Image (cartoon, rainbow, N blue to C red; front, side, top):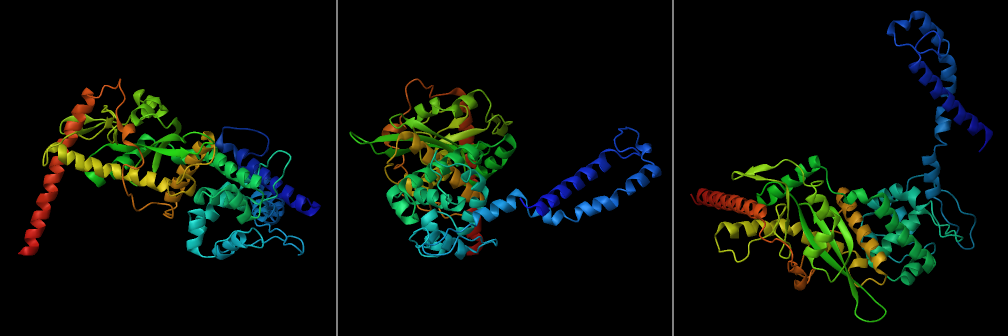
Length: 460
């Protein structure tokens, strides 16, 4: 570092220390501590007044020192452009780039070999997000993507390019050889960038898919109540299965259990179960089950539903057991009955989970059999789940599925049977479901009554 810049940085540091001393030791003796406010006399103030010109002198170099902050250095590093073949040395672009310039950095065939044209639509198809979201994510992940290289093989790739390689592979599901050719990197670099992105997301940003606190669950339950009229529901649980290619024999599958809110935001994702296990078995083996049973989750106060204390609960489809905190639909409900009205409301509450699973399958790497081992497949599921929530947080719906198709396609019927050993007719679950069914019937009748009055008013 140049001596002038080092002096500026030290000047700023000394100024801050002196200001801190001024605030901490307001007496005539800067190094004496006192608990008596009256000791800050006019004499003491006059003594410190002599320091202000010196402090001002140090602070005059603050702007120069600020230019040496780690953030500014990292931004310059991120904007480093690699030298073209047969061109001069690489240069630094110290200004923020526009969306088109960002696409240029990633899609210029001469530099990184990425094929899509420079348009918003092609950017979304290549990365499952808008260019502004990509910029935001690149800035957030930069120090984590830039701090590690394969042992003995430095990649010399910018964090932005590492992110582009990893996202492209997740978004399109392309073979690593195709990704490497598109970006002008080696196949091993493509694999490393993808695994590094998954590792960073699943390790450092797993809280983006963490279960809400009791205060946050209040907003979750309000969302479901607005959707279906039933109070204190804190999520819908479902199970998705993803196929893994094997070298010989039938393909394997890996199961992932998710809980989502009414906006399709993932509240919990637990992947890595063998795909031959039914959804009820997956639930019993999950940490979510243990945390709820031991009242570490879903421990908010109950609400009154038709005279019944309704504790927070989840809803699940056929194949899950009826529990005090897990409500499933009625079987063989009679048309027009309380049970039928509840099943209609219940099916509405299940839709966000179906939409979320369909959205996860929108990511190319999860839309087809995964050509990796089970551990890598689990990392793909976790990374795509975290990115799913990040996009919703950014109000970027590029990867959100709007067409559900066959709602049963995500879980085979054989996985919807309740495993032996469950106490299916749980007393607490039965009482709560009956109360919710009565409320659903009231909600149904009120809605139809209002619709009839509204029709009559228009007819008149």
